[in-house]
Image 1 (cartoon, rainbow, N blue to C red):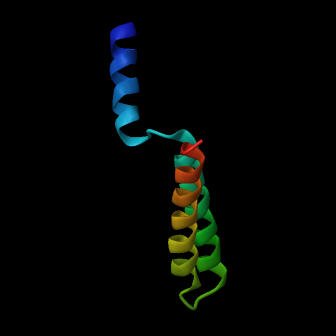
Image 2 (tube, rainbow, N blue to C red):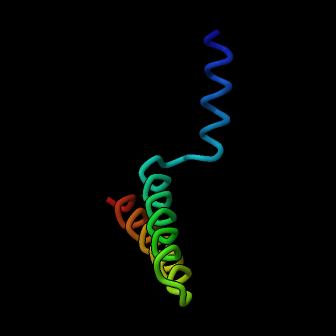
Length: 65
């Protein structure tokens, strides 16, 4: 059972290396979905791109410490 658990953790680690970055990106996606739902002028794309870039930048700055 430990062997299978180890394999599962390694597979998840391939896709989610940094948990906080993954959570931040999921939050940005949720925010962009809300914006798209209520504002129909392309603002959702701007929110998505800016939010993901900001999350990545914040993660890189945090990793430098």
